Image 1 (cartoon, rainbow, N blue to C red):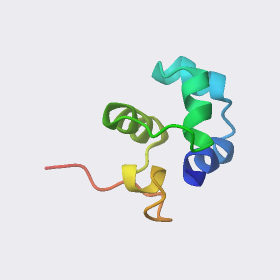
Image 2 (image 1 turned 120 degrees about the horizontal axis):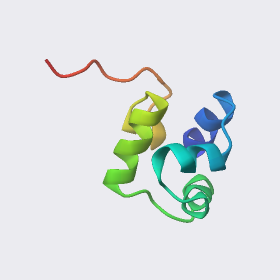
Image 3 (image 1 turned 45 degrees about the vertical axis):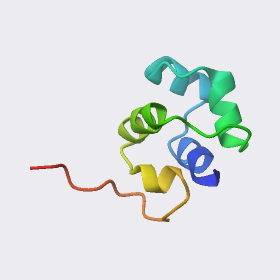
Length: 72
């Protein structure tokens, strides 16, 4: 999952910063970024909201970082 690491680096966040803000452990984040573990749906939602992007971007399904418009 290259985009998961890419967006973290672009935003100049450490895994520790992401852990502190999301509650997802640093070791779990590392496993996600190295493709050793697939994020749960709940964690994908947390990360997408934290990074202000879409789950599709985090899962490398699109290169578009802009999140979807909010539901009306």
